[in-house]
Length: 363
Image (cartoon, rainbow, N blue to C red; front, top):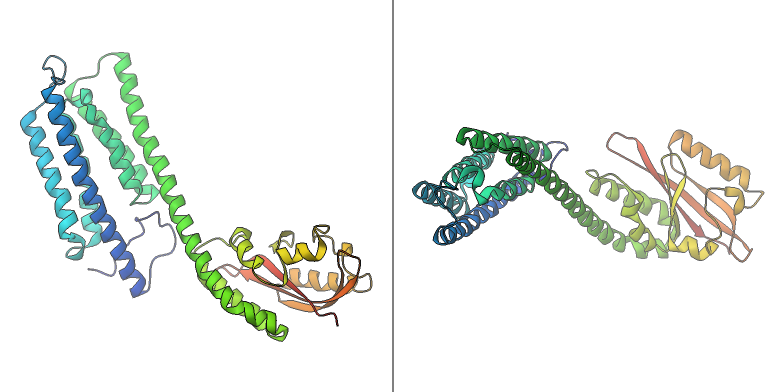
């Protein structure tokens, strides 16, 4: 197996290339498993088509004056297709040959087998044209959207060419139906590609949330017991979150469940400084009366200029900051708070959000 193989065509990958050897090997194993599953599905579809074809022949569906079919060729195509699917499923050729070669060979074989099968079972009149839909969906769950669109176009060209060669379309109604079938091929590929991509994104997000939750549970006790370690633990949290989410766009949705588990008043803002999330401790402190964007609503008048200056400085230079300020609780009592603010950056060192925490140190 060549380590130079480009796996970016698989599973909707449009991000940076895989570089580390362990990740490369793991991704290769995923592709081999996917191809094995696809081979099993091919074999099952062949069996179902064989049964359906046999029953249709026995019931007289294929009348010579209506649908011209070729039984010998049909059964040959079924046999070859089944052997191909069984070989992929049982032999796992991706372990002996380059994975990309095996995958694209299966991809081309599907086009050839389906075209021959439709020719053998009546061309335009064949009821098995729905195989285009099944095949494009199977492609969408293995390859990225570029391959899916190219496959849709090849399927349409192959189908239309077959029908034109057989001279089976004559009326406007037949032309309209043929165009609708082609449109459904493209539409099925587009919808399946969207579903596949969304499934991949959700799987990544769930894995990231699980890893982040495990990390936060380990640090929660230290945050409660020793406020002096807050800045160090917050930086550790930032490093872990940044490392585990470098392949995903950071958003407040990823953090809402996690920040609610921290027994500190916590909020987040977008890169421009507008507050977009509060945790439950904030709600307990203010009882929902403060939105967080107007500091004068809850910061002591004597501390307000200093806190505004700190916040504007943080937005301007992108550095972490902190300090002690008096905040008005929901019952009107002024409480002395230890405030810390950090930023999260993406792979291009651009600030994508701010995280702020406040600890009541009154008394």
